[in-house]
Length: 269
Image (cartoon, rainbow, N blue to C red; front, side, top):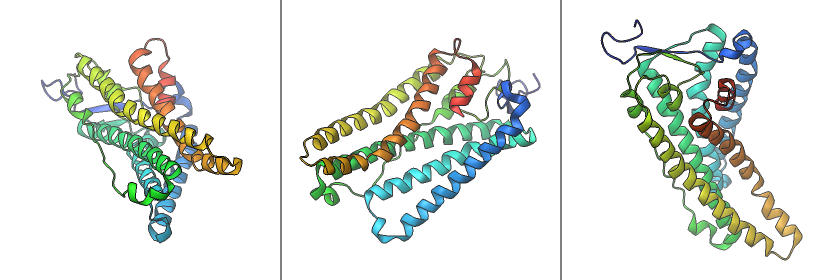
């Protein structure tokens, strides 16, 4: 096979096939993607600059917002430029090591975003339930966990194909085209999702349960409304982040034969 390195079963490169079912409209798809990418970059950098320059915003809640904006910029930049090159110029080939690097960054920034959302839920819990102790309980520290999916993927043999039916490299999309056993990859991926994503969601659920109890106990309707309004943006961010992520994760593992590949690409993209 020409795409293999000599007698090795490690490919020299992969072919990212974009969105095969919509190949005829790749150019049209690229314009809204480019627009959304430009808006995301401009908006997030603007927010980070504002938080950095305004001393009054140097508080945990705004630090978390800046960190969330930072991870959004990195997440978009790790996938969108490559996607636009595929849609605009049909540049589908990506070096094997570059594919692994992209996979590493995609999953790293995903875990960072999940962690920040969990910390923001804790921030809202402390601000609403312990407002007088808010400044002493929460400090400006964040723990970032990096998940090295790349090592599990690099060990796999690729003797069937090097064509990935996707717009960028992610763990399961790359592992699925291997001719070896991906059982360890699937188990590890599931373990990570349940331990990290599940832990974050559990913490968020507990935080909002306690917030709800505290808000309901308030005597004033205006106070309840004000308390709930401070959580609205965070709840929207949680829904937008976790629903597509978990849909993609579980359909990749349990719905691969019943859900069309086009749906996988739309949600995961």
